[in-house]
Image (cartoon, rainbow, N blue to C red; front, side, top):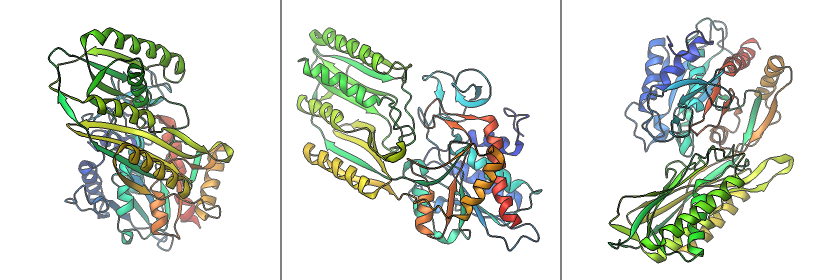
Length: 502
């Protein structure tokens, strides 16, 4: 029985969601949620595919599938698959569990009607994991409800969706009997998605030169924080600031004005998470004491520029220039300058628009890490066209060649071609017409969905993706609308009942 969500409907959904928020489930760390689902299946007397010892480097084997037989008399109905992913993006870090739930308003401030995790400031909030914890909870609630008369059901739960759709990519096609799949990972209630972009990620790697820090040098930390960040597909067209680009612009202006400096460290994002727009970045800057005031003036000047550029879309933007602990080593001058130029040159944002205002091709400058002499930069690209992905691949290969980097293209996944003649889509439209009196959209999305891999493995499969109202996924402001969860649940049930009737 849920305590935080007491009195909210559907009760079963909120019970499961609250339990899920207590479990660590960052990508590649899904063992607790996998066990939760397997234990649930055992209690319900349902058949379950679950390999408890499957390692993180075998994501297909970490899939969990729960099978429920049809109600008496409905055995001949087609099996329907409910699909959700078990992992979540953990921001600001993996140490956020159990999540601290709170009610909020639509603006993620104290209020009601929505749910978030953590406090109400960028420094105190965390991701909520409604992406895709609500999808898991809805699937389990339907499996649990013995009063429902439905045809055969399969609940298909994947891992490592947030790091390249790896579970969907590698699962054994023999696990699913159904060829009708409802993906429960959408973020707009009044929307049915029936197609998505393909994508891939690119990893640059260099070996930099380091040298001792002079005894008289001063160390400062340049820190960017408070940005909205967000999903690198869904939010890429909104003009949100990329913390890495803001950091690089300050460093470049300092270099342009003749201030000699070295970098002792730089970090932003997560090299295992390419689909998040960086909301914070930091660099440790080593300076001659005589240059600290001049560098600080550059920081102040560009901070004012950023505040003017982003005053509406990034109201929480924060730039700090702080004294830092002394460092033993720093990157040499040539590589410090080269690193700044690299970050200034790697593209970010929309690269091409399609007709109708849809983003066709985009790229996200996702993360940078410097560990000893090892420097790495991660990017993610999306496109509805294979030619668009090839363009981004070639562009980043060219940057690697110019800068002497090794390049690895990873996490490639296919797009999902829309099927206008899908019977599943027809049934979903009928349910949404009744639920919303025609006030909804049927669309494709500039983001990767696991349905792309499902359709690739089962070309005859019919898929849609639906969900509740969820805002700012992958950020500390992530929140889900309470009333939309009930409507979403009813829509899923309506589609399932449609197959049970005829």
